[in-house]
Length: 420
Ligand code: EPZ
Image (tube, rainbow, N blue to C red; front, side):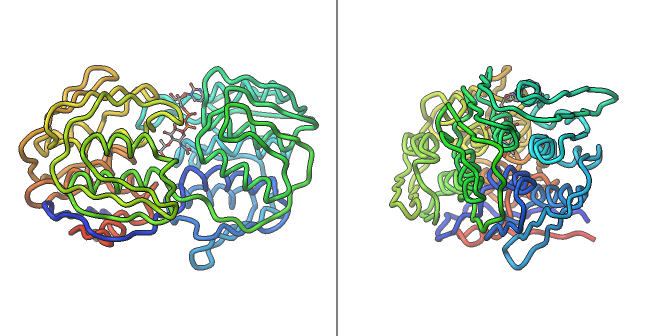
């Protein structure tokens, strides 16, 4: 069934919203449940397409996973398979995150090699190199990765770049390795700290997450637990950018400003008044944004690549020009052509995009190209004159439980139109 979002722009936002749980926390945690003997209850788990895809993977492995209200209950006791089909891998390329946990639990794992995605090639060479260092044998044949590991042994692993997924995959594999594993040049994203907290709640012994050196004492039997993931800092960044785009006064509950400090710093430069109070973040934007200093995406604590598109959308009517440099992914400006259809002035050359503010944007029919690019179209439509229809919103539903529900709470005029 095709649906689209219908947004009427020009309405300032006003409201108080509790931000959903973090997609990029819950996905590795769902993989981590494979290591836990006993039931795991994920409180207030965000209802996302990517979570549904992960649930299907767990069920295909013989695990049970079911919703009870807003909570997701997982029990992997019945796990009796250790391969992930091509179909399931293609649904969500970040399913590679299951590899380390399956290998640690079963001593073997077969997954279809994850292809690229809308953002460009998504190699997992660092994941595989690290698993081999822990003792895995990995043969790549016919588009499948056949992995075996009689035993995994802890050791020092140095990542050539601070990959979020590689850090998480190796943390999970290391839980099943004898002895100590030290991951150096680890990614420092807050979601990795959330994964550490989950593993320790299951009886694990993980430390250092959030820094560049994560240490895991493996070989401990892990048990189930109840856990609530951290709030989604990228969803929060999206709604702060929506307020900057449309103007208004909003409060986002549950989010710690320290986890999106580079985004709030950019919005303050543009003229927003933003205050963090330990419970959440308030954001008041009363006048058009000003252009800001160049924005260069980088691993945490640098500016998050996932917030690049939505910040760009918030600056489309700003006074002056802002330069973006996307250093993480090769192809993360696919939203630009759709924003230009609304009247934006954006010039892209390789990894650089220059956004020059325009007087007005006009509502248009636009198509989502990827998850955060789709969210950016919503942010821009809130500032456009007239109505916009946003198609292929399945991309957005991968990471936002209900973008229309959230924006409605914040005062936007937005509905989801379902077409039979
Ligand atoms: C995670 O992806 C997030 N996904 C992404 O969020 C996010 O954009 C990214 O981290 C960066 O913060 C989840 O957590 C599920 P990486 P991941 O490994 O783990 C290269 C969203 O919008 N690389 O840190 O895939 C890679 O090609 C999504 O929510 C290798 O070369 O990111 C990329 O250029 C999009 N070899 C860079 O590193 C490897 O083995 C960063 O990738 C691994 C990665």
